Image 1 (tube, rainbow, N blue to C red):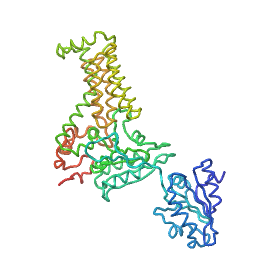
Image 2 (tube, rainbow, N blue to C red):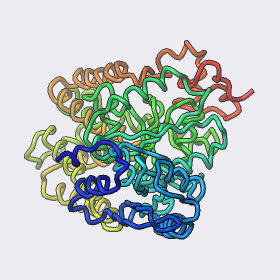
Image 3 (tube, one colour):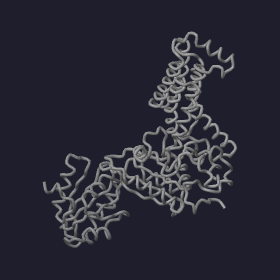
Image 4 (spheres, rainbow, N blue to C red):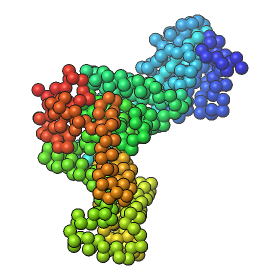
Length: 497
């Protein structure tokens, strides 16, 4: 039992081997190989690595070949054996010494190789990572007509390279660490030194450091564990799969957090305005992109209030509509056995089911199900008399409007708030509708993201001379966007002179 508790490397190789074998008991993917080196083959050495996640060419050619053939550099047993090997025999760029078994185990499980020697109370940690990863994929969820097509992959190292490719500046800092007591997931905190605000950077680092959990499987874990108002349906951290969008966020003074095993990175802080911005907004002319942005905000408002507005008008305030429209609606509902509220809920829930089914099914089948299923079910429901044709139109328009918003997390928040507005409209009519909208606005005004108000620049814009409003609901020409947003350091607000 004493060997199992060994925390540091011993100078006796047998003890180290027993400790490693006990720790990795029943782990058949851990390769433990003992061999001899030295001029007279009198130095016992031990090699430990994880199969299938290492680059075998590096182990065989740059490591084992040198250790077993270049034995002339090794004299006799002593505490400096590994130091001699590191400086004269091992032809791998990244080599380090370590004596704590906990750190050695973590490195082995990450794809590094550990080398032990008799008489030396340290181990060499040699970088031999060779994870099976896919190449740089194409963006699937944030598709653009004009602009780069590449997207982040599941490798944090590869994602950092995609950022370095776009930001060739020594001021781009990449600070790596691990989160998760058992998963020990690699994360990379990226920012541009001088542009980022120190108080925001300190907040980010502090909240990441405070995460104490067994495992981090995806970037979504960090998203949920760092947001301040966890009960809010609206996202407080923006996520993206596009390197160009993340690079633009860094130039604005924001912090980007890449998480290993996740094809999405976090961009923080975030405001309501950032969730309505797409990468393509800056690749085309300002007139059309400003028009599209206005459409996005209008679509978000329609998706939030349209079902509730229909309920409020038809149940409580029909005088707000022309007589011909009211007669049309009343005539279409003559054979419907349900109330207006139940009718709307039936179609909204049916649309939610179709949406989820389309996501889970393979792409060709999912798109077909969404289009054909919506048409068939809607028409069948009308023919059967369960709902009226007007409600089908209302639900369809509401669903289409949610697809206009470029951020799925924001769409999900609006989808949830829509049902609150429906409930209040069903009880209080137009007053309930306005109460629901007002509650949503009040809630948005009460959110902040790492010290930045969520409704900025629509609130407190005067503090920065209204410059941030130039890139909000409308996007003015690029030559007029002379200042960075509020995320940037005050000394580096000017980006174009």
